[in-house]
Amino acid sequence: MNLPQSNPMVERDGVEKAVVERAAVINRTRLEPVVNPAQWARQAVSDQACQKQADAKAFTGRGRLLELRQLLTELDRTVESMRQLAEATKQLPGGQMHLVLHVKSSSGLTFLRWRERSGACRHVPWPEAQERFSELAPKTRDWYGLASSQAVLLNERHKELRRAIATARKVVLKGAPKVFARPIPLG
Image (tube, rainbow, N blue to C red; front, side, top):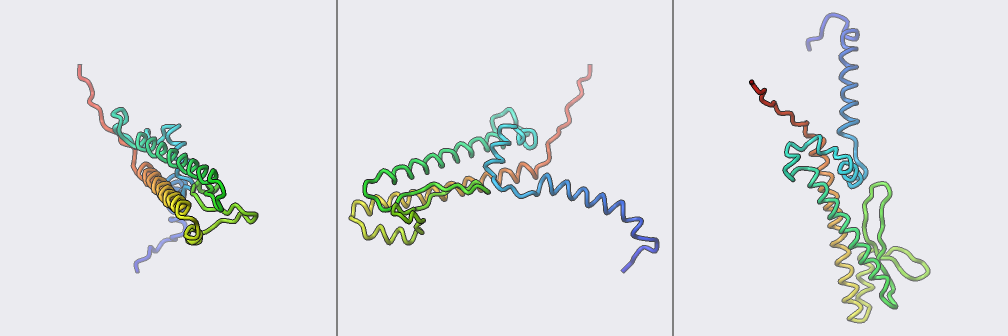
């Protein structure tokens, strides 16, 4: 190994500090984990921050800002469908269980779960809910089965949209702003 003969600690102090400071800035701006990608997207759309960072085609109706708006609209529609399905399961007369919309406060993840109507009001795992459905009358069993399959689809759709928003965020933050040289008018 070839080491320099002078005092390496004195020479490297300034360089190491600069490297550490630069790494800290990069980590703060680009690599911080986003706990709630949907919240970031709403903020980026309202500030139009992604327009400034990534869109070379800002005025053509294409680019990240439009994509984020579409993803957020679809996410809002999915959450509204989840609410409607949860309300529909509560309206069933004599139902033993109903769907409840849960929102994790830390991440913003929204999902549907089955819950008992009895005094315990505990959450019912999906396999146990399927077993309970099999014990019901055929029409009621079919209705609960349909509601359960719709709930699973909506839960998956919500996760898929959140993944798409997180991917769009990574693309926006990794892309350097595009600066193009403009011709200088002569005359």
